[in-house]
Length: 341
Image (cartoon, rainbow, N blue to C red; front, side, top):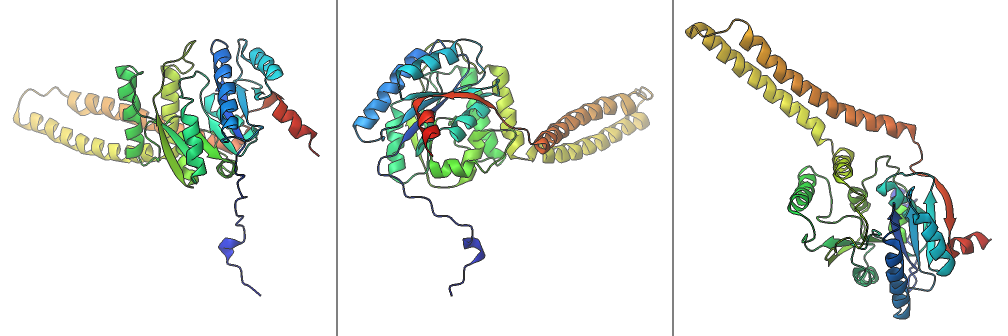
């Protein structure tokens, strides 16, 4: 009788891939009615071309995820789904944020290969055939990385690239200049399903899956229509999410700051003592109380804020609330799945 090693008991080999994969394009949408007509036209044409040249199998589709839009986004999605069989829609019950909406699409859409991208046409659609070629070459995950940031202003370019470098410095594994334009195989998607992160930062989470990866470079275009749904406030929130979700470095930094403050306090005490003993310029009680009070008070407040941020994440994670609720789905792909026994 053959003995099985413990590490082999739960191993399930990946299912063989079909020669031509069913491709699903996943696009989170929030108030995108101005750009949606052009986006749909281009994506439908792209899928038809991919099916014609044998890169995508029949049944490939576009999956829009409506993240609680307040304009006519869902109405347009429903209209397009009635006209084009390749268009499907997933409507969330309320706005849950870009990362949760994207995760919902990845967890809900069928297909052998899923490509996530933005609905504003800034991601180069012509990079998708190259991403599929990378998948055929054996990559389970293909990252679309910006080759330059010519469309960004100076402030955006400096802060964005600085942020990626900061994450790398803190030990967070991220792909430089990569957002959420990527290809994932069904095997990678099912592995991602096992991660139950409450505070999502997919740019840091996907590299932790392992698997073979490759990179495709593209030039990001200007937004086709409408306004950005990611203002500075949201970008800063996502940046802070990436730091606090993947590294405890800020907590360790508090220890270093505490040590520096302690050394500074001792030096200040020596200075105050020297003024008192060797000059007649000392103001009684001022140097020994006011300066250390303000310094230590500021450090303590900042330290408590950082600790509180991590504690809040622990608190919210223990509640295990659902990350999203799907209100309804439309599209031929979902109808065919429901009809299957």
